[in-house]
Image 1 (cartoon, one colour):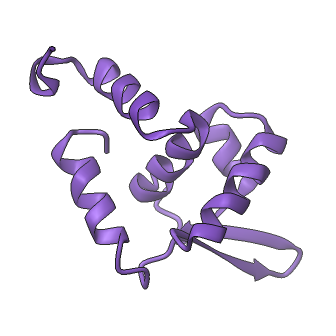
Image 2: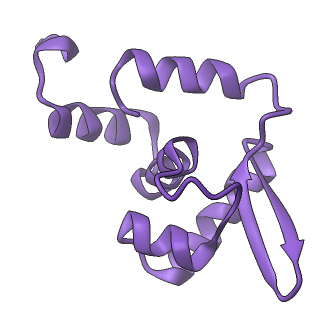
Image 3: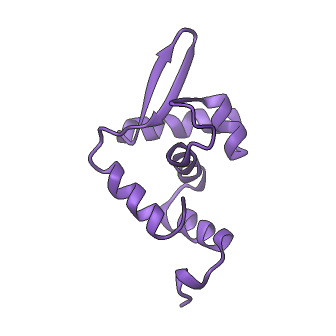
Length: 104
């Protein structure tokens, strides 16, 4: 078995996504943790653009992530925005894990 530390970044991403479950859900969570736009919360459209996923898939996976409590949604005017749920006690562990394996 190859060591994760010796893998390049793309291979590490692939191992984590396949190893932990739904690739799309992990990709969304990854982008919400990294939040490359630096906005406090992101719309599902922005998440779709950042992840390369289709809007319907983003909506379905965000629903599951909100259900787990890892992501929270906020209604702002006519838009629903999403961010990592910093109040969830598991989020620091997820972020630490993703950081240690260089997923984020």
